[in-house]
Image: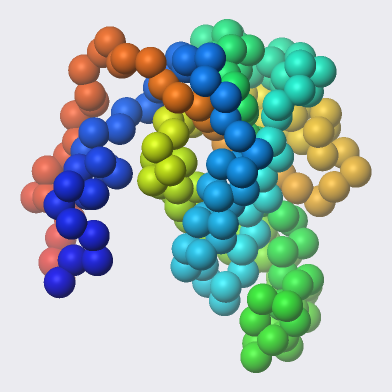
Length: 195
């Protein structure tokens, strides 16, 4: 039996679109908190939760971010009510005693295998990014995720004193009408196989 009804499935997945422009309606601090509260409940390996979110709200912070976005994304970031920089915590495994105390001994294994730690952290942060985008939709907001950015420069500008690697920028707000058709989605037969 489905956990949500067909109407909710339509409202969460079929109806919302990636948006490029937003109304002037405010996104509240409580809405941002609610986005995170939903995001953090999604499954990750070992309950690791490596995703970190930096909310860009102030004009000063926005001015720092815009130059590092690709040309086509600069105006979008400039006009969005809130922009989130999604990052992975490079030292996510240092908190095993908190998020998975039963497996705390694994911290030393990840210490000794930095490539494994980096790939595991990024894989799980990307998984959480999917929960994040779904949470935005679930709360009646719209998003515009963007990978067109100089992430090395964003890391230097925003995270020089932190162990975080940014990988996605997401505009958030109440979207306007989308004027272009939805992109093709692959059929079941094209995208899946059964062994």
